[in-house]
Image (tube, rainbow, N blue to C red; front, side, top):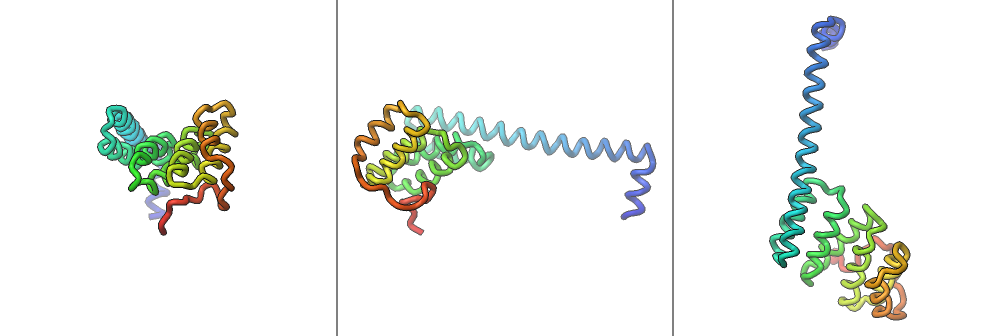
Length: 170
């Protein structure tokens, strides 16, 4: 194998052929990556359109597809979390997605507000207030965050890290 590699790299014609094959393989990999990012974006946009039509179950499928293709996009996690938060039975999944959106992009105020509203509905006023304060830290004049903070009242903040979910059953 070493001799074959040496012969290929030392012969200018064989080296040129090898370089061509290598470049072709890299281009194919880049196209596949671009294709999956494109498909992820298309799934995300379709999910958003379905959510705006109040077809939430279908929207979840498209958001989940987008995330399976490109899990690095905070907006995909955010939108899936927002749709899932509408269903009390999916609040743990919603919380996980919203926390992931915050982890990827800590300045996403709408994720803090959505989490805070979920916590308030679940009777976790301390955690709701904490989310409102985090949102207001990034955007001091945010109306919904201010309303959330008022609704949460002076309930004591729950101990634990921000990224620790409170709906986790495991």
